[in-house]
Length: 213
Image (cartoon, rainbow, N blue to C red; front, top):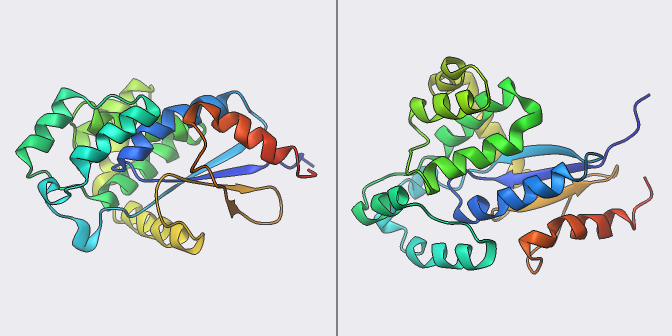
């Protein structure tokens, strides 16, 4: 029987600017801690009435400066052009369906793929409702680009996306990014509000040190 591995659940939305800054730090922490299993759950940040032109999301121009100050993430010129034009609409269901397709191609690389999606938008200004975005990400990781691109129009992937949105709510997630840790008695949300991204690995270590595995 395989030994139990603590499960780290990452509640993530590819269109979340804070996730864009946070995910690279989480990738490093997880890479240094192979004893952790990792699951990424997509959140529905921009669905329904929140699917509006980006100009209507008035917090974004100032929030991006806070993300950069806290995480070091750089917002690329192509994204800033989208922000200035103002008519781009973020659709989290498309993004979640796209991530589901990528994840099925390489489950062990899900954090890398999630990070690549955020980078594609917030650095390169590429929409996550564009099949070519997923084709490019897949090919970057030596995966089948056509299969990845097809996820956007696959009803099964969209059903999976909506299930993940429901799962996120059941887990009690209210904002993104959110980390949950399951050490055998069910997932619990971790308070990382005051933890510097560069110290997230040490924070996980300190929690795991108090839990008998």
